[in-house]
Length: 400
Image (cartoon, rainbow, N blue to C red; front, top):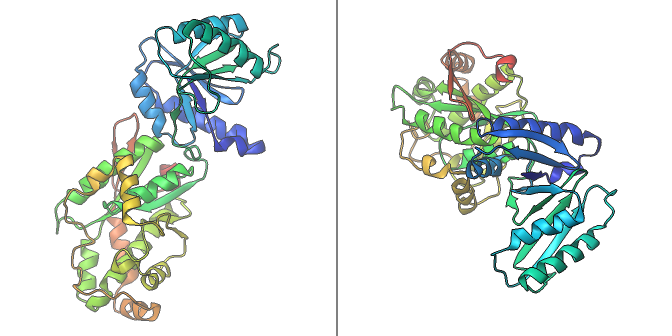
């Protein structure tokens, strides 16, 4: 198999580090599938499959991994024009096509024939065997040839990759994961940009059922197929909400809940050495996501809050969630902490002064400490089984 990376080609002197990260991720990703070798060679990554390799599973896994532009199931032949032409003749035998073209790339400039010469000679041989007409602008079939130092690779189709940057090359982020449709998509967008996402989920067990926790676990498991390892932090939030209910006026409760969540997530992020938070906020989608309320919620944080979905509409987000295969989990009915003790008419234009005045009647630091003391940590890996970590302190070393 030949893997091409897109954006990494623009990284200049840092390109070898990005490519090494991608090669390392591919080796982990394809573990247990009979892959013999993964190596970087002349601007592309070569994957040598063994006879027992499951091509369909290899293709599925590679299509999810950030950093890959496209990949192809290719056959190596000696870097010799006659050998190339003879193999392509065998490739097209028995196939039908209304038109075709040859697309050759000569990565090793020491090869004695330039790319147009390869295309003309191989095209002539294919036409003699099949009678197919040549169409250089809109061919039905494209036969691709890549000439390297020792081998040339011949193949028909390119499989699209996820694009973006290799996982971990852009640092780490802490994603607030609600269990709804939006937050998994927000996390994916940062994963695709090379961030390793860690997740924090707020639940109200035992006041409510464990359904929201189960949903969060399954969503993290599915997102881990893209970033290979993840950490989920489950935060008990029901007691915090009960305290807010008896202290804060109903219209302000949603904003106060969100400000407390941000403070807790920020503490967890700082303890782990993570420099930014991520949310699935979308302007105007719910009462807490008006510009005024988003501003008031953000004022409770000292770390930056990234909102990759901020200007999208629900249809766009839903389409991406379906593609990520998180949508069917997100829509499972559950009782989550976002709906517990929610007032009928929440304020849509809260001010920072009003929120801070309401919080003066709360022991904010004590509530944050109590919630963090009850955090449960679970680690996920792909293609490794989920691991549970005992409750306790969270260090930067644990999170790497």
